[in-house]
Image 1 (cartoon, rainbow, N blue to C red):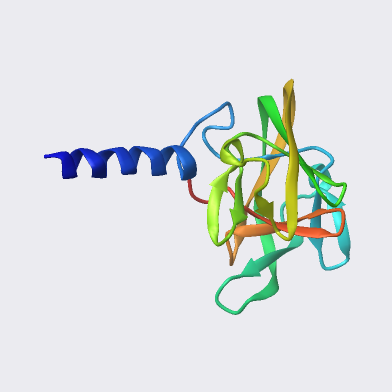
Image 2 (cartoon, rainbow, N blue to C red):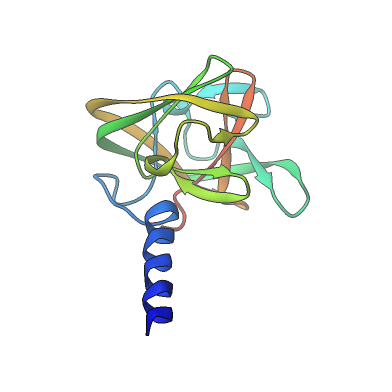
Length: 163
């Protein structure tokens, strides 16, 4: 009996750390205006990207950056923006539900903590600001992620193709 209770508790904790959540973005993650998305011609503000643009994605099977095509730009409104201040002096601003690649796992922004490393840079401070603010994300092909440039750091974020 206690074994089953232990498994249930572990499942709940795992879900809190790595899963779910919803917000005005429908549970999907988004970037606040001003974040830079990597393209083949350099970094571009997320709010200036449009359907058909080519942006950089990361192929985890080959370990290489590849081009991804924006099939759809999604613009929403977010009541709270999470600000992640990095050791390299840059900042990543996202909705609470944006998924970020950390040590091989997709972790929602609301579950990131001081001391975690996103890319090669450590999170040194967390803050939030009140919105509502416009937020942006994409549906991409062929790979479901995109690269955000934060100072000299490339951070891989999940697109909005799957919840």
